[in-house]
Length: 261
Image 1 (cartoon, rainbow, N blue to C red):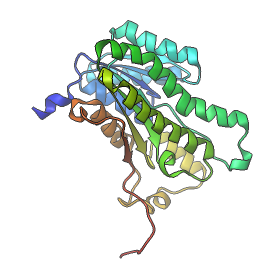
Image 2 (image 1 turned 180 degrees about the vertical axis):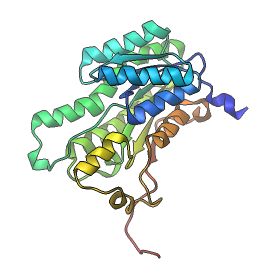
Image 3 (image 1 turned 90 degrees about the vertical axis):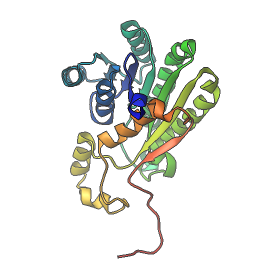
């Protein structure tokens, strides 16, 4: 049956940035589909609360592991903790990311490095650490969460755009090198997603949701759940022959040309 392809029973998934937004919705869906889940982020109290909610809503195991993914040792400890808890890693979702926007001439070296550490280097370290466990069983899925900025760029986000573009290329190379082990790697490039934190940032900057929606063909911003839907699909057996791809979840392409009423 088609629904069997979305059965994650007996599998274990690790989701970074799993306490809120896209990460939380992704972890929740995996747990609803039977997976044991490890969620990671810096805020311990928020993370523990999210893990408790997932356990209560799904009945699946959900382990909260406070982790600063910019710290190599912390990433290594996260993967080790997941294997120790569940004996395996079937799915790794490198979702942690973010930035502070600003003009290129005002980005300090430390700020550039910090954005790369969060958005690209952390995914490399977690992938490197999870890889041997997947190779050993010749099966596994890695999903990296990127952004439209990694594909089209974003003025005011030279560091962020570059880091997300690097993440997308890292995904493709991972798929090419590790496919022989039965490991698939894909990337989801999210557009304007109205997570609670994003909505708060837009409001603080005086940006209305309607202003953003005007540039999106579907006429609205997306939700964290809609990005999670794509992540879970790519991790499922329904996507068993999809690897090395960047899938946009952005409400459609924006382009110039004629305007029709």
